[in-house]
Amino acid sequence: MTARIVPDDAAGLARALEVLRSGGIVALPTDTVYGIAVAMATKGGVERLFRVKRRPPGKGVVLLLDDASQVERVAIMTPAAAALTGACWPGGLTVVLAKQPDSGLPEALTGGQSTVGLRVPDHVTARALAAALGPLPTTSANLSGLPEGLNARAVAAQLGEAIELILDGGAAPGGASSTVIDCSRDRPRLIRSGAIPVAGLARMLDAAGLGHDLHEAPSSG
Image 1 (tube, rainbow, N blue to C red):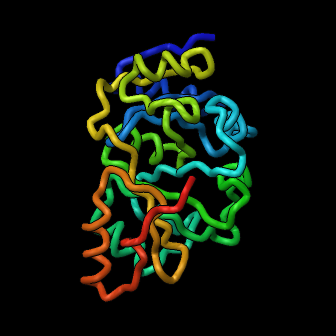
Image 2 (cartoon, rainbow, N blue to C red):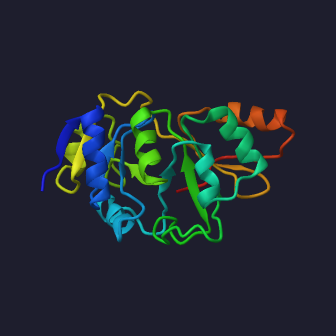
């Protein structure tokens, strides 16, 4: 199998929806780097996403959302997360929140953890897919440990034999992964530096009178 590369346009979006609904994996452009996604309803889809990426099973993947209204379907919003996402979504910020007890999220998606990463991307195609299919399990379009895919050709070089479709949206406009903040605790902490400067996020929380540990070094992994 070799992934078909199609333009990121209306026809490409329609084809991507067909592939996802039939259980396939689609590579798509976002506002940060390219991602690979499956439909949440696909039986075994998240597990296949891990196999294709060669991702360790203990590391979860992110859910891309259409807008913040989808958060409560799967996770418990916190004041800190509300402050950060209100200022930064849509955009390059991923927040980690506690799962809703009745979320029904696959264990593989969260790496067996009680939390889940969520993001509303500033990209029309990614959001359209999430609007049509619901929260979309997504991870960066690269093999674990290799450089992230910043264009369709780079994605094809690493994953083209393992996925069904690549939406070609040109070069990724962001060029860096999203910043990841764990907001599931009383004091938010930095998991990964990325597209949005951490200093600015810290100032937002300071202005809101919310405690945080964003000035500390990010955790490994």
